Amino acid sequence: MEKSTKDKILDVALELFSQKGYKGTSIRMISGKVGIRESAIYNHFKNKEDILDTIVSSLASSSLSLLISQKPINEFALKGKSFLREFAASFKLLSYDNKSEKFFRFMMIELMQSKKIREIFFNDFHKSHLKILSQAFFIMMQEGMIHSSDPMLMAQEFLSPLFFYRMQATILRIDKENSSQVATLFEKHIDFFWEMISTG
Amino acid sequence: MEKSTKDKILDVALELFSQKGYKGTSIRMISGKVGIRESAIYNHFKNKEDILDTIVSSLASSSLSLLISQKPINEFALKGKSFLREFAASFKLLSYDNKSEKFFRFMMIELMQSKKIREIFFNDFHKSHLKILSQAFFIMMQEGMIHSSDPMLMAQEFLSPLFFYRMQATILRIDKENSSQVATLFEKHIDFFWEMISTG
DNA sequence: TTCTTATATGAACAATCGTTCTTGTATATT
DNA sequence: AATATACAAGAACGATTGTTCATATAAGAA
Image (tube, rainbow over all chains, first blue to last red; front, side, top):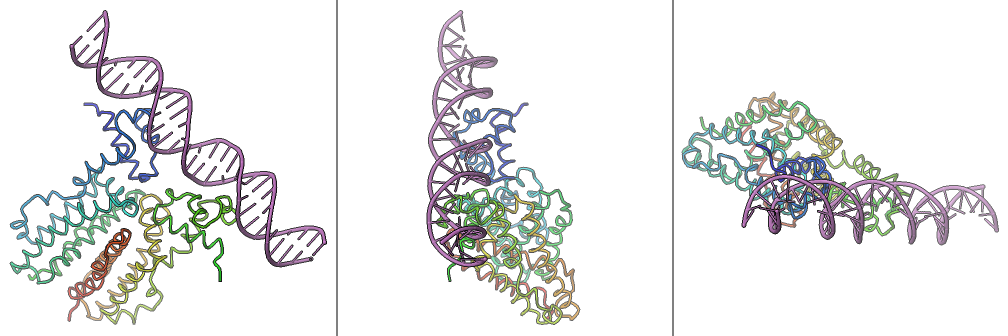
């Protein structure tokens, strides 16, 4: 099964966008890597921005939100530490998935430059995670599994290190440096955090 | 006291770099905002990269490391929660300082694109903060002020939210959205974290 | 006053940018 | 067999890029 030219363009474009950013990537760089002329690109996409939009709309949700999001939270939160472990594992997995990592890199580059990306970051990425976590912590508090506190604050405090560790792992892997030390931080974070909040 | 043309160029360049990134900023955009012709730039700097290098070497340390770094840690750490408060306040202050914020924005844009910036991020920014914090936590543990744990892990866990909140505040202020809610997170983080680790 | 130094201008350069247009060539449809 | 469609190449466009050059002007040193 051959990949279509259109899909090749999207793959190459994401690769380059994640390395050089949108402005730093030229149509000729994309077409060159695909193996066609720059004019042939326009048989598949209206213009450069159309390539970007296609990538963003197809990856924004799948690369940023977690599988865990779809499951019902009520019962799932009752698993306590296991819930957090699964949440973090899913988060960590994304940073080692090829396409997700590239989209994450691209998002980081454009975060300070593009309002559209900022909205995706806050809405698709941040808020949705905070919602799940705060609901889960709320339930855990009701059940007396963890100490009482502001669920939203707790969600922020739990999520921040995950994000930061993911960012670090991504940065380290750009220079092909060893990221295994950072990788263990995901698990250590769970242990540390649960130790702090649990009533047990 | 008039500002020299050279300083004006540096100010304008930092402003534009922090908005559009290095590649997205042209010599003509800089010269135009300064009020001179593009060729006049080359009377002050060898080339575009020279402008960047001058900015980076003059701001890297001052915009990223904290005042607190210079004080002796041994006695300072004994202040416990107050130490963390001062550390976070100093961190928060940087995100509201004009030049520091611009440099931070620029660093975020280039983090995934420039190896030099990545090295600055890890060495000047991250490692130096971790060192101070882990030393302080170590002392606090020795004194029985906080629960025993891995000081380096605790430092990572304490620092991550500070970074993430700073990033959020920076992003929000780009679109001139209200960042006061994020601003309070700095203080809430101290309370939450101290509550978790303190033996009291 | 003469000479040097610093800093400005405006024109020009080669390279690259996104995009368009004409043309050629397969493949599929009628 | 004739026709339409999909996709490619290659040339060309106007705009913008970083940089250089010759030249002009004003200030300070000799």
